[in-house]
Amino acid sequence: MAANALNDLRNNWELIFAPAIENASAAMSAWTNGDVSLALDEVREVEVEEVAAALDLTDELSTMVLLGIGGAMGGQLILSFDRDNACRLIASLLNREVDRDEAWNELEISALQETGNILSSAYLNAITALTGRRLWPSPPTVTEDYAMSVVGQAVMTQALTEDRVLLCRTRFSRLGQRVEWNLIFVPSPELLQLLREMAATL
Amino acid sequence: MTATLTTRRPETTVGMGQIAVLTGDERASAVLGSCVGVAIYDETKKLGALAHVVLPTSAGRPGTPGKFVDTAITWMLNELRSRGADPRKLRCKLTGGATMFAANGPFQIGQQNIDATRQALAAANVRIVAEHLGGAKGRRITFECDAFTIVVESAGETSVTL
Image (cartoon, rainbow over the protein chains, first blue to last red):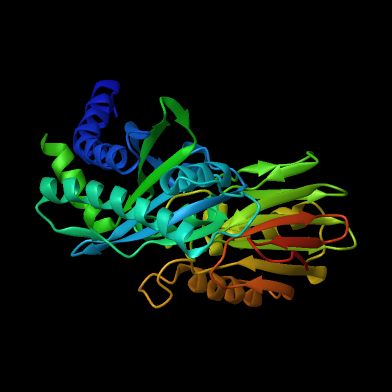
């Protein structure tokens, strides 16, 4: 593909995702009293073998909030951070100290779940407005696992039929400093096809 | 078709769709979800290979040999034979194949990968001597070539050595 055409496609993908990120950022800012915001980092299609490198995933354990995408077209949303960042988020939401070496209690887990809920609802509302297809997040699940293994499985639904998968990478800031959070949006093949058609006509 | 092949390093990270060939005291690691880690080994030669396979069948699709079960196992067997391995002495250990989302959903890739791997190994007369498969959690595996051991780590669980 010629460089100009590739740049056009990237810009179109960014136009598709910018409203979703903007919505999610406003919702996160409200939820965290202005502490956390997010911005679109990059949208691109990569070979399935390149996913880990493209998202800077390591073989360390991560804390993740997993949400399925309900509606006529599915997919997955994964919010991931390391345990230290998860503890800082919980501490700021509950306004109390959180011991990183202790298992989280129900309230602490629900603070993470609610964060995933708020973020994903705002994100999917914008995608719904864009596509005209109603999408909503499933109840969130909090897990500690290898991000590489979870993301690897999430992209499998695309990899079954596609040689390249779409990755939308988001940059998070907390109190004005970049933090190592990741929001990974993996549309189903049907939703990806719809988004591709929309990107091509922009 | 070319493989992503890495040799002569103390520890190699084997990413999705990659295959590492190991000798002597070399080690290789991988993080697996629904993917399957296929380790094939000739104990006499202290020669092994670890593939991080992603999908059950190539069905003519392009990609590195390590991406699909059928092409990965064919490539590994050819490569090990070309390096002097005795096909009659090859043994295999399998890991991975988890189902991390929607255990009753339509995309049971982990189980499909497991089934396809077992079938391909049986067709090639390679005996499976140990396995750590399925479940709902990811795994970090480390393949130590000289002893043909695989250390399996999962979040919140004691590590297991195969």
